[in-house]
Length: 113
Length: 278
Image (cartoon, rainbow over all chains, first blue to last red; front, side):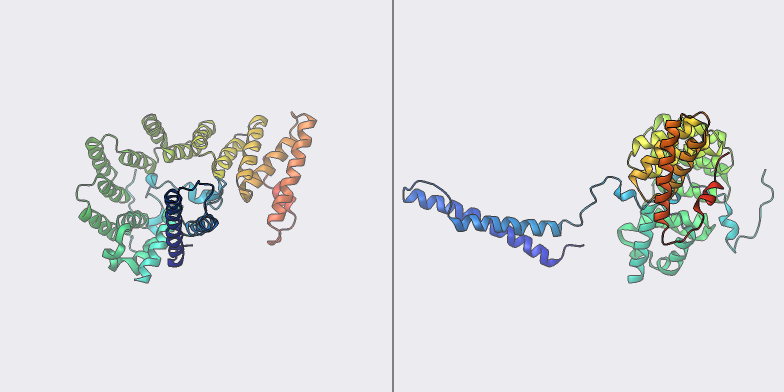
């Protein structure tokens, strides 16, 4: 499944929202400092937004990063067969019947040792 | 343009799967790609190499020549392209000239494994298997991690019916790629061919491993059946072992039958019996 524009958009929104949360948290701290209050916990809306943006980012990343691979190491090899696996391109030889099947090849060389 | 893209996709699939399919490649080349060489994009050199080999396979020397020329245009001094020139001569059975070119490449770059492999392939093409084996063994002393070479060596040993050495080569391959069911199956094939109770027991374990890695490997299932029945009918075996082997062979038979359920095969046991080693 290729990454669609929609998923990229979702991912961007997620990151923007996360940065916004960080900024809000920082602002909350400076607000507390100015009013000389003690820090107990972050306001609930900041925490909720942080979690929502986390899940949005997770959704976006999963769709943008591409397909999952099978966890079994041998999964990719399951559809391979010996017939293709035994082909070794760097050791191909051309002294086979291929040329006799070619209609333009007529002169049979009879002088081979 | 869509034609070109679909052809490129098809060629890529074949390239990755190691399919030889020379005739089909040439057909695609003539139909779609020949007039669009400039549109091949990033894959151009790879496609040209693939088509060149396919053309040599089919003795389409004109196409091969064109591919080599195109490659030379992009990489004028490349040794890799020079190797294709040697292969071009090889296809015409001008082996000595081909070797001359390859020797030149090796003189330029002593670590050029491609050229060394071609020299071995030439020996193979000339039917000088024993010399090819010797050369390949020397080659493997230097390039020990070359999986292709190990595989080729095992094939050569099999053609010379030197099964124990072929088995050693496949062992080496299994070490490089322990998750490949085909290698386990191949090793078991060789061991079963060697015969003898001990070897057949080894074959049985390796067939089991192959089936474990890929439950759909039909050849391994058949091999497992043959190996287990050979153990069960052997005279030197203890009855405990025989019982185990019989149980396993029944399981394999069920497995094969369930996989062929839709295909409708009658009298399986009789047919398998015809394959038995005596």
